[in-house]
Amino acid sequence: QVQLVESGGGLVQAGGSLRLSCIASGRIFGISAMGWYRQAPGKQRELVATVSSDGRTSYADSVKGRFTISRDNAKNTVYLQMNSLKPEDTAVFYCYARLQVGVWHDYWGQGTQVTVSS
Image 1: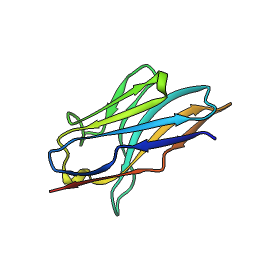
Image 2: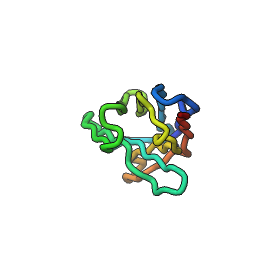
Image 3: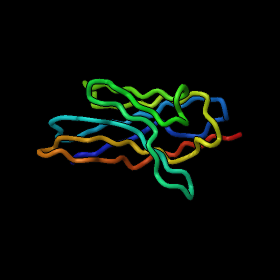
């Protein structure tokens, strides 16, 4: 069974840091883009950051300079290092990956809660 499993969420004070991890497992023949989205209460899911298979990154304006996305292709893992966290970063963070499982298909993790207290 192909799945994405996130870890690393939690409660942190404003100004603190957290590192999210997401591992893709199962019968996977290739991985294209990977990324992170988030959804705050009462809001739509929004893109946070993406990284291509060759390492090119892109970020939402709201997190530029504070968050860093990276990936380890040997481990089928994507990371999100979050620094200088703000209360408005509070959300459920979802991992995303485009995986080749016979055909290319988009997969999502179950989500991990990040709560930033003021």
